[in-house]
Image 1 (cartoon, rainbow over the protein chains, first blue to last red):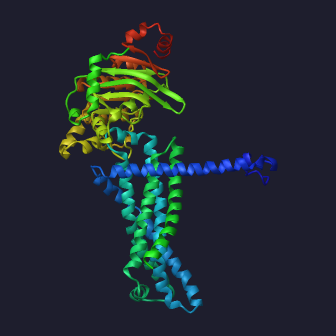
Image 2 (cartoon, rainbow over the protein chains, first blue to last red):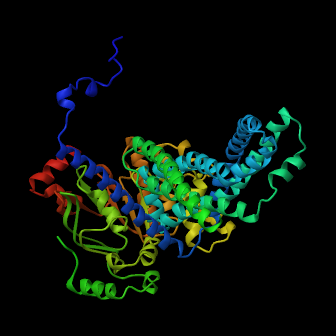
Length: 282
Length: 272
């Protein structure tokens, strides 16, 4: 097999002369990308406005909201708990060797607890839920769009922005902080398990040392910021799903783009919100 | 081509000026559906180019035409799923173009829509699909809803499949359940998008008979979009043939057969 055999023909056939491009064509390409991005944002804004308008009108679709709370919350719990536990154990094992090297082994519980509560728990929960729920919403609504089910809902006099989008977005907003608490708990618990396997320490002592000096605001701000992650995941999943075009390929694109965009915006929001939290809860 | 008298049009326009929710519930004496100068384009492609049609209460109109002539778009305009570029759509005297979403939804409750692929909610059972509009738009008790669902499914011959999922049903069965769901709120207008598309001739015949039976029992105005001339001839009182965005001809099947219009003759020859 030649070295170029795996390269797609389109690229394989390009020589240096063809690959070169002019500055105007580069500007046009860049402008096209910026234009598409702005257009996407504009459409997202209009979608958000439709959802807000639908949200304030009766009926409030309580049953569907409860179903979505179960779908987003209960069904994500095992995965989030597992991810939290794994991160806690790894953090404990990795931190231990570093702290021992600097003679600060006794700082392990507090380092672990602060790390998990402040950053690792929220961001891991956000990214795990982006993957599971974001993809699920994008694929489900995308599939409903291409099979005319969303139009059937609308034709029967029910507002799909409320019935499908609002309920899922609210479920994500409400469930993310609760799932974060679960991830935090599992992270701390399995951090202790990992530590106690190396050097036995009572759970009570580990927790006492870990939470020494921690205040309510240490919990509150980082946990509540995941509500913003929930808003992002729900909004992007619903938006990408409800604008699906084409057949099964379109559904696949919606599911993938929901995960990618939701994860990207969760990370960006995390950076911005951490700065805000440091300003308001120093 | 237009069957709308000047007086009826004036009455329609008068009622459209003040669209009151009260009028939705009362029986309307005028035509069920009036389309006036309807235009719709997608980009540079003109799909509907000035459609004028009237459907009386209790009447069935079949809209025929080649694929891509805007037949399905026409139905989606009538139920407000898409907006026309220009023109008016009067449903029981109400111009839906000027209605707010809540008022439009009230109108939609008076219409049943059977989608081309039935569009059953695939995460719900047959029973839950039919229950969907009942749960949202009626004050029926659980027992009343169950009775109504059984009655509707019995009407379409699906009473034994309450707990089945849509994926477990054949195309014809899905259409039957879609019909039951469309009839759940006892609509005054029924819109059918290709009810026999993708079905074998025997199942198509069964669906046609079912539609005829339901029309007789429910006394609805119906608009059937189809390119199946056999089906149109069986179930429709009147036919309208769309071509290049316009109503090429409108009348009974006999009138279509007697037409000396070249396109009409070609259409009948190829499809019948």
